[in-house]
Image 1 (spheres, rainbow over the protein chains, first blue to last red):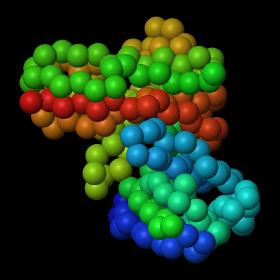
Image 2 (image 1 turned 45 degrees about the vertical axis):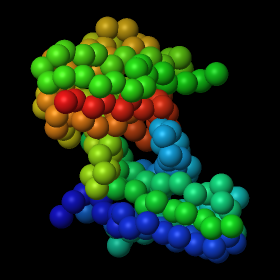
Image 3 (image 1 turned 90 degrees about the vertical axis):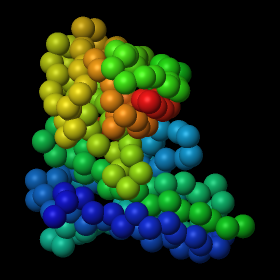
Length: 109
Length: 113
């Protein structure tokens, strides 16, 4: 089993829809959970990070962590065409970041 | 402006010809790392450095070397590139470790023929 699993399937949604992304992980040592956004031909940039189980909101973005289930989620409300990007989950452990494979999200106007 | 700068952005080279990809950050970050990004495999860490003169292997270090002689620079060296090293490479830096925000460079697209 890979340390971090993120179904890399592309996701197309109409503008205004809620985007739901998730990752599962197997390493109980992971303590910090992050979501990075990567636009085409750019490096990833940090979108949100959380430390403990629970929810964290930042504008239209909500990150959820359930450590008991080893499951994290990212929700994007009222999605906009500018949200079209690849979203990668990442988790820290043992001095390195372990990334999911990323989800390409396309928001259709 | 806070940034991580990689050079070159694009490189085509031949098998066996040594090359260096430079990485420089202007944020006085202690932690720097190199990743490669491949379709279907995501981002994988090659090497990381927790401070000057301290480097360690990541998940896929074979065929790569790094050095950290000064805080701001962390070059990636391919002594004898092979076609399976064709990839998109990213350098990243963060203040203290992975649990603080990692800033990524713009990427270097390397093709080895």
